[in-house]
Length: 299
Image: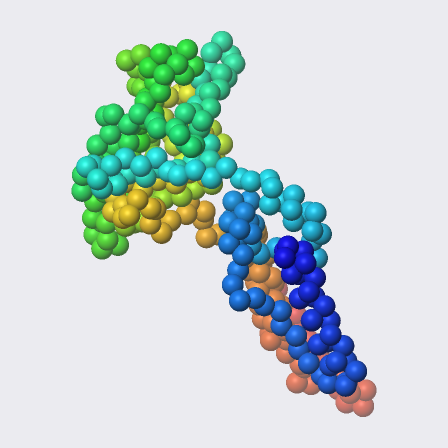
């Protein structure tokens, strides 16, 4: 039997049961389930980014099928290994660099040559140990440069105040034709040593997390942009990222606005209550039959 016939038969049985319950005026709650999930539907939903097969019940069938067919490209991270053990992991939805030439920005997308099925980036020059890690991505013919390297230098050490080890992305370097442009990221890109670091956007030009090392550094002529960026240089286990420490701050602009408004309202209320509590009634009232109240004036 086809899947359509099976579903039709199930629907007929369910309809008969509900009709019996309705005719007998029996209150009931119906829960529809199955013996096991459909593996095919679950895999398609995961590929399409539908959250493991969940979808809105009111969505039309055609809409659900359209969303399933629009598959999202999912690829594995760049995995540098020392021997057979994964040492450094890097993943991003987009890696791009730009250089300023003659007053115009020239862009180059490094994503297709870094990630994807069948893509094997060249990682010679990469190293890692217990305290330092360096991931070197080697490219060819990038923005008219025959040889181009994108380097991520990381380190970890124990911080006495927090009593735990943290790793930092000390530098992002662009090496081309014997010249090196260096961006400092240690002040913004950091995480506990056993975690990975993730951020929606890591750039040096819009809400920058990367800054040139000096005003004379060649990095001032470059722009780097990493979208959906995640990196881990230490304590990699099983070739998979550890728990991610996100760069998103706890207090967003909306939260700050709400807090400031609440504080202002509390101050106004406190001042009003204080003024009300300071009011005092007169201990004497003007009696037309008695002597008039005199209020002495002093200068």
